[in-house]
Amino acid sequence: MHWLEIGALGMLAGVIGTGAGGLLAVVIKKPTPRFTGTIMAFAAGVMLSIIFMELIEEAIAFSGYWAAVIGLTLGMVSFYLLDHLLPHHHPVTPEDNPFGGYLKKGTLLALGIGLHNFPEGLAIGSGFVGSTELGTSLAILIALHNIPEGMAVAAPLQQGGTTYPRVIAITALAGVPMGIGALIGAAISGISLYILGLSLGFAAGAMLYIVCDELIPDAYKSAGAHLSIFGIFAGTVLGIIFTSWF
Image 1: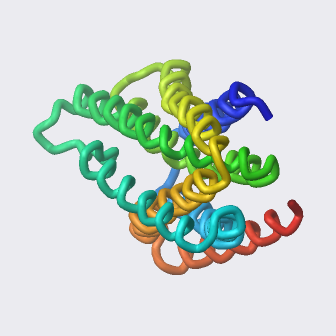
Image 2 (image 1 turned 90 degrees about the horizontal axis):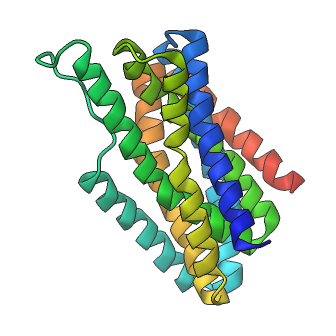
């Protein structure tokens, strides 16, 4: 598959994922925390199965254990630094203007999520170089993970008075950097098998950080322990079935 095709598929996954979250928020109006939390838990379960059944296994197969471990470490550390330098959780303080504060929060969230989508695109790009099936799995998975992120961007924009078409457009645009990341990931991973293994390990580390730092804690906070556990279990089972089909 050509780099441009991989970049286009990565961009499609990003735009559809965050855009679907924005559309869902507009349709539901006020999605309950339990609903969004369950979606996040489900996405976490799917991601865990892909990380350990696909990404790490493929990284070891292509380049050996050390490449997988080094890539995993680089992915975790990179996302840790990115999360601290460019956080995408921006609470509105009571001192903020009721409308201006919400607009500011929505804009900052869109920017932060857009920047975080770039390394997720790297994961998709390296996945497609490994195999079309792995790249497709990652694209679908990350698009699913982006739905609650799109909803998180849409909610404050709606409360700030932004029109529905603009809300959907802004949330969709937050997924565009994923296409750029997928293009670069495909180019880098195609250099050698060792670089491909490192890239797949990096993707696994980045996704593991997202699961541990964002999805599971936010799911527990929003949906509670029981719904979160059910969501993680259901997502893991679906992920196992999904990877077995491929």
